[in-house]
Every structure is written in structure tokens, then in C-alpha cells.
Length: 330
Ligand SMILES: Nc1ncnc2c1ncn2[C@@H]1O[C@H](COP(=O)(O)OP(=O)(O)OP(=O)(O)O)[C@@H](O)[C@H]1O
Image (tube, rainbow, N blue to C red; front, top):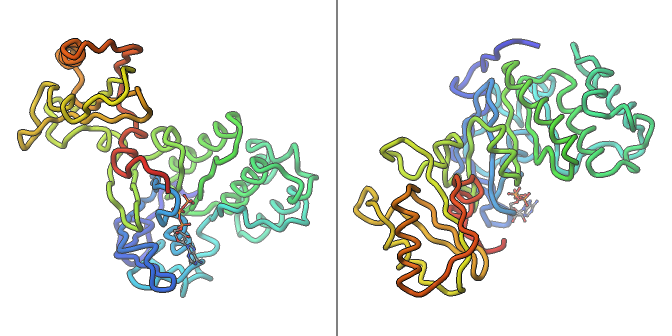
């Protein structure tokens, strides 16, 4: 496998470059001016609520859908008009597997490997993803997680320079997830541009070098995980915002609580936000320090409220995701 991959031709800052992508169905934009760059030798995660436009975007990059407008370049080429040139250089793992259902798993993998000039060692790949244990089973009889593992093996067996993984570890058991993550890290180390979508925040936190949060067909936040977790760009310590979780009587005044917390934001407003993920359960996020905890307990005491289960921890990517995209169901 090549150690570094230089995108050939076109914009040279990423193996995948998406500019102003629009995809409409019946006049309705499901992708609405989306920009995204995925460099070689990095894992780029695309997060977003159901229906946000992630799969549509990825499928435009794979050449499976034609953009309404905007540009998509993969290794400097157009995924639709240069599909033939890109096929041997790009690995694709579709959300629904896209595998022939009547063939045996082992045969599928060997057949896919045979289409490439210098495929990986099929037996080694089958062993590390556990495909060998169900190699003689037909695809239609595989469990969801087994099918995912076979689809991943098929996506990487040809030593691609760019890999698109749509929810790669969805439905997998913890052992399989670990094997998938290890493989993704190895691909990155080998200079591959890995683009993945996921609903698993720990997957994104663990794996991603760059995260793009998509909502309503647009990227609404981008950065490293650390950047997304940091309260404000000029956070004095450059530190990671904390989260204080506690239980108390339902219906406390969230705005008043946030305003009572210490510290100033850049515009003089409170740097704190208070949310209630469930009745009687609260999360305060902001620059967590001993003064903050004292202010919280004093505020509750003034109202004769007893808090239970107070925990102080790191703000998670899930907190950021919910802050950005809201808590309503899609
Ligand atoms: N062929 C199609 N015709 C019409 N609408 C479509 C088509 N394909 C997708 N959509 C719509 O586009 C929107 C975005 O779908 P998409 O699959 O890209 O979302 P997603 O972010 O991948 O969601 P999920 O997390 O559920 O996989 C959805 O509202 C979906 O119903």
C-alpha cells in the first residue's frame, strides 16, 4: 500500500473536495450548499441527525447520485464522469451493504479482490474482520453485523486511496467494532482518506481527525473533536468545556440558572448553557471549576432545592451535537 497519497489534479487540499453541493428531489433540497474537504491520511467524520443529507452527500462523492449543482472532486476527478478511472482507487461501503445476496461470503470477497490489480491478502483480511467464520454462508443468511463486516472487507480489499464508509459499525458487536476501528486507524496510517458517517459519538471521538456536523443539508459546524468541545475559540486555557450533571425537582428555570453561573462570555453574556435532557435531569455546560460548582449549589439552596447525583465531567461530543442540532426527533 502506498505510504502517502497525493491527490492528482484539481484542488489539491483534499482527496475529497465538495463545494456548494446541492441535491434536490422534486424541488426540495436535501443537500443545500454543502462544503467539505477530506484530506489524505486522515479520518473525516460526517455527523448529523436522520435525514440531514449525509448519505446523499456521500453517494454524490461515490458517483451514485448526480449533484443538482456544486462540485465534487475525488482525487481530483469527477465521480460521475470519471467513474471508470476512480473505481479501482476508491472503496465504498454502502449503508445497505449492496452485496449479491445469493453468493457465499467468502466467494464475494474473493470475487471483489480479483477485480483489483494488487489486492490485499484475502485470507488475512477475512481473518482480521472475522469473515472466515461465516465464509461459506450465503449473504442473505448473514446477520446484520456479519454483512457489515463483509461489506467493509469488500470496500478495502482493493487497497483504495479513498474509502467511504456509511455507518461502518452500525449493528456490530463490541469485538467487531474494535476490529473495524483498528482497520480504519491502519488505513489512515497508510495515507488513505477515510470518510465515514456515524451516529456513534464515541466512534467519532475515537477515530475522527476532522468532524463535520450536517443539518438540513448544510455543514453547521466543523473542526477537530477538541475544537468542537472547546467552549469558545478564545477560551483562556484553550481548554475543554466541562459539564455538570445533576438531578433536581422538575421545571427549574434554566435561563436563570445559566445566568447565575460565574464568568463572562466574549460578548459579556453567560458562557454557560443549561439544558434538561429528561424531566428532573439537568446538564450545565461551561467553564467548569470549583467556583462553578459552588455557584450551582448556592443557587439551588436559595430556592430550597436539593440536588442529587451531581457529577462533574467533560463535555462530550454528544452534548455538542445536541446543542447544535437540538433535541427534537427527526
Ligand atoms: N431518491 C430520493 N428521492 C427523494 N427523497 C430522497 C431520496 N433520497 C433521499 N431522500 C431524502 O433526502 C433526505 C436526506 O436523506 P439522507 O439519506 O441523505 O439522510 P442521512 O443524513 O443519511 O440520514 P440517516 O442518518 O437517517 O441515514 C431525507 O429526507 C430523504 O428522505
